[in-house]
Image (cartoon, rainbow, N blue to C red; front, top):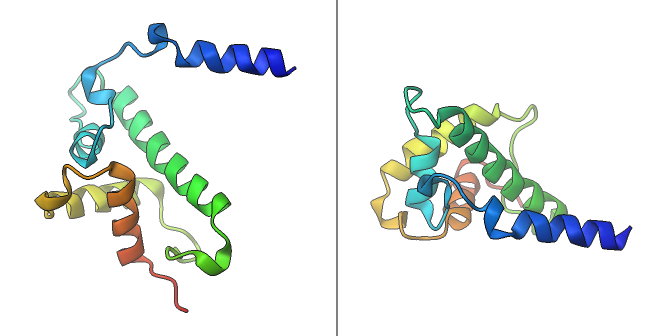
Length: 121
């Protein structure tokens, strides 16, 4: 089973699977904002939005699962806001903060989330 898993991970990491539009590389916040802001008229819109949502949800789930509740600084309301609304809010916020565009996207995402829904401690 480990061999199968290792082979799968290796295959997914190979250069053959890395091909795709250059805007699908999230090197910084500007890349992520561009990806999440792709116009519906673009031929890559569906893939870009799926990638955008997957990146954001993956980052949040990793944070939520790896951070003890007592150490969390992001505490969304219950019920949680819709994913599309959160991403749209982040994109609008990021566009008003040009100083963050060269920072890692994950850092900017959590700066936004922590400002929107800080934990009360």
